[in-house]
Image (cartoon, one colour):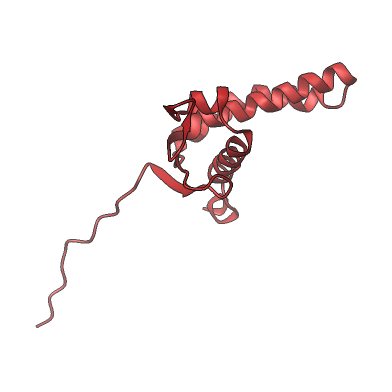
Length: 130
């Protein structure tokens, strides 16, 4: 007689994803895995900055400087929102945090982290269909 279990394996969901840095040897970082509520919150926070950026980048030199500032503020927002932890990096003798990374860290690493957060926070084509 063949018995099938009524108990199915449960799914385990991790709220963060870890990545090894491609630009900083020995550094790895954890970013949030986005949920529906987090996607709503992030999109609300990004909307105003993005609309301002789109408007300003078509203007004169002063407006373009404002647009560049807006772009940097978007990157800062992504790190503040999405970066959970950094391992393998110290900044001025202190364990790296998101705030330290923004204030004093290497820009090439912040760029990599922002790109990863952006990639993780965008719905794929298959996710949009569902």
